[in-house]
Amino acid sequence: MSKLLSSAPIRQRLDVEEGLDRLMGERALYLQILRRFLQDYRNSCERIQSLLTQQQEGKAQLAAHSLKGSAGLIGAQLVHDQAVLVENAIADGVEVAALLSELAVLLREACGSIDDLLLEQGSKAAASDPPAVDPAQLRALIEELVGLLREGDGAAIDLVEKSATILASALGVPTFQMVAAATHAFDFETALDVLEMEL
Image 1 (spheres, helix red, strand yellow):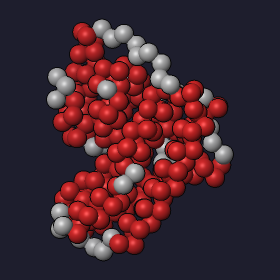
Image 2 (tube, helix red, strand yellow; image 1 turned 30 degrees about the horizontal axis):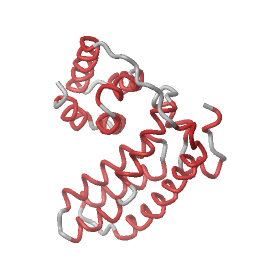
Image 3 (spheres, helix red, strand yellow; image 1 turned 30 degrees about the vertical axis):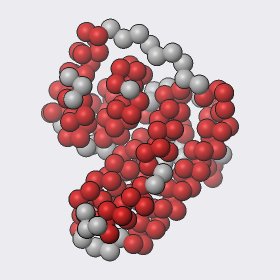
Image 4 (tube, helix red, strand yellow; image 1 turned 90 degrees about the vertical axis):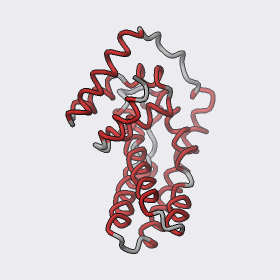
């Protein structure tokens, strides 16, 4: 794990240790999620601005909310915190230009840190073979998680972290990332919606 830890200035933009802790130290999975974050969120600010221009405030708020959850999952705390401000401003119907501009700067820096980290890892970033998963065990795990989410029980976060590798292997990294990010953001309803499609 120590080889993944970045220098202090970079850790202010991307706290790799925090991100790894959320995934119980699963390095290969974390790197996969970082790649997916770049693919899904690098242009989030442009997307949010475009939606606002089209007066689709609900979708813009949802885009900020999604960015918030995923940034928190990977340890990009500054992006997470700024996305919260943007999401709340959109919900309140106030001017977001300055907040969105600051978010764009923070997101660009975080993505730059991710680019550097992935480049540094190089061939070491190759994912290991996924673990074999017993279908009955997986179904029981997902049903337990669904139950916790329905009850609004914070233990759902612990279960997602503890079972990160199994869930990511079974659901696929994109789906797991959606569930994990929503769960960590206490957006249990979204996590539940995604999981119930897998049942």
